Amino acid sequence: MNQPITMPALSDTMNNGRLLKWVKKIGDPIKKGESVADIETDKAVMDVEAFHDGYLAGPLAAEGSEMPVGAIIGYIADSLGATAQAAPEPKPTLEIINPPVQGVAEAPLSASSAPPGPAALSSPAPAQPVVERARISPYARRLAQQMHADVRQVNSGEGETKASVGTAKQPMRHLSAGEFPYRLERASSVREALARAVTTSLATPTFRMTARLTLAPLLAASKAMPMSLTLLLVRACALTVREHPWFSAMYTPEGFAFREKIHVAIAVDTPDGLVAPVIHDVAGRPLRELATDWNALHEKAVSRRLEPQDYQGATFYLSNLGMFSVVHSFDAVLLPGAAAVLCVASEDGGRTSFTLTCDHRVLSGADAARFMQTLAEYIANPSRLIEMAKPGP
Image (tube, rainbow, N blue to C red; front, top):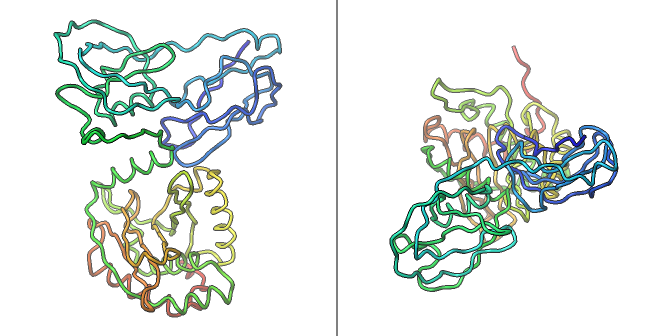
């Protein structure tokens, strides 16, 4: 009997996963708990583990395909002979009524091809509505939306999915204006997740405040310990938040949620996009222990092996671009779940710009000013960063 392998839900926010590669081939023996495939989520690359012993059986989902959580991607057979028997493919779950539009240029939207440049449009002719049933992948649906195409005009082609990319009434002005050539690349899951997050953040009213501080004492302490400057900044931020509890608060319609521990997310640049691993309880644990955690998190972030617990639960964000000497000031979008994000630029004339982006529903300008004052004191006295959290009542 062939048992289905499904796209797992690896976090509460995961809706789709991208099958990167099969690490086993049809007929290979599999042990329970053994990895059979690599999938890409919106944060990391993770393993799909076998749920019992057997043999990998087809049909297998194509490498590079994006599929919703719960979709069947392959099968595990009880016996080697059963692997040659093709298991039934899942039936289409989406049926649409598709009135064709005459005079509409079509471009392939398969995972292996990108749409060509803008096509000329012929004169529209009267359209006769017909009913068509189509299977639309999440990728094709999303790409159609990005290209301002009506999802009802997405058709099933032979071996690929095609979508209308423009009409006489609604051309793709954002791509085709000026007759300039372009190419369309499939975004990584990380970049797609970031796009969704920053779009959601637009609903949050924010304000910004910048302070010019000297980093010289902290730089000297970083070299003497030795210790990552970013980690010392994270510690300084957490101890400052501990003294100003509103910076650990989150607005909800029911009231303000104050988190008991301070979890700081650090922006990390990777080839696939920006990720933000989280160091937990930064104000309440020894600095050396935090350093061990940060080294492990940074390595996992760069190799795309972060697990959900590694990037969830941030109460404060830090973005450090001090390594780019030309960047003397910048700010960041405040992601949901935190009251503030701190941006640290490169040194300029002996001082460095620290810019806070704050949730104005939670914090005021005076709150931000007091935060900056306390942060400046910690940076000027690095020995205070070794302090442990104060005992509770």
